[in-house]
Image 1 (cartoon, rainbow over the protein chains, first blue to last red):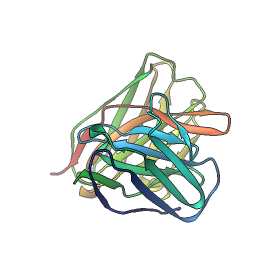
Image 2 (spheres, chains in turn brown, purple; image 1 turned 90 degrees about the vertical axis):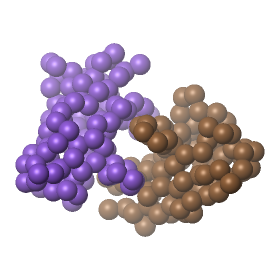
Image 3 (tube, one colour; image 1 turned 45 degrees about the horizontal axis):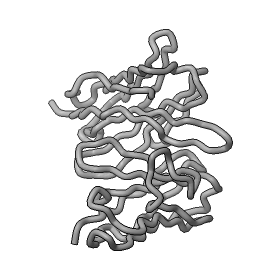
Length: 107
Length: 121
């Protein structure tokens, strides 16, 4: 099973700041098999990025994904109030697994 | 836009069977998609459980495979989860979701609201 390790566990930032979230895989993830989700309390996850760097329908362009092999990044260029949430990476290169999540909280 | 809705008991006794159904509306379950189950223990992260295609091909999380059956009923436009011999560790919010497949990509494009299942006597 491919283990995904996300860092940091918690990111404390202010609105308008840039957020950089990391997802590291225990073995190489074949392109294009990496996605990112956002989850708010009491809600189902929402797809942000699939295929490493493709924004899902309706996702604003301040969200971007990049990476390859074992290292992937989700960047939020300027945090809006509605972006404070938990973010999960997900690989589907070998079966499916999720990272443990990064919480983006208001500083 | 397709909508998904989980249904089933909210309380299951230890050693019993957890059974959930996901009803699909606004679209056919016969499509180029995996129909998937994901769970989330209280206060914890997401765990993929398994998935099924409309031809009944399944993929299961390895550590759950011996206790798990996912089935599909294309006439009723729903798919189901049965998890056997449950323990308190199976307490979680269970989500059903659609994973579209196209052009070498796949993506979770629709989710149910989730249903909390508690394993307790």
